[in-house]
Image (spheres, rainbow, N blue to C red):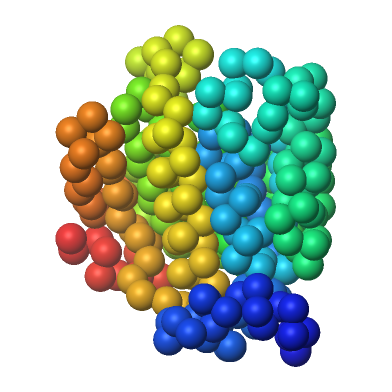
Length: 256
Ligand SMILES: [Zn+2]
């Protein structure tokens, strides 16, 4: 795979990074990344991944743009109200980087459709805010061996985790918490969505380029109010209905 002069200039700041360089940029161009949810996390993630030169972005969201989205979903503008989120995002990404192919699915991801929608991805980013969808994405990623980058928001706190084999997302969250909070009910700081979305894109890029230490099996918790971050190990759950706590893929994580 070769790059045009235009692409070499476009990606110049990546090409001089030793962890990316020509080989890494080629891997980005050859990659397909699926983003589930074009909201506060998925939008900024999509923008940074398109700017980074990912070859194909698959965007999944059944919803349309609402006025209350604009406080944090900065991929949308006021003129986009009531348009499908995936279509608006494609327009924005095409303007940012015409080399990126977009595949749109204006539908809800379900346990039945998950494997079809995630097919062929190198990485999946889940930025949705409902647990049934998160469980369906996790199960499909586990079944197909696709690494999952999970980004979540709660008021002033953001969480980013990477799951590849066991422990999986459902080891961390076995069932929908009884006190599950939604952005609509408890609020969320808009700029926090950008932090989590950008970090989700960063983890996806690291995975594709094999750069640095991915967050695999760990959870990064960012407290926006305190301006502190900590990273904790996720323990494999032997009773997990998805992975059964089978850490054969990365046995070191279970000991942590
Ligand atoms: Zn599990």
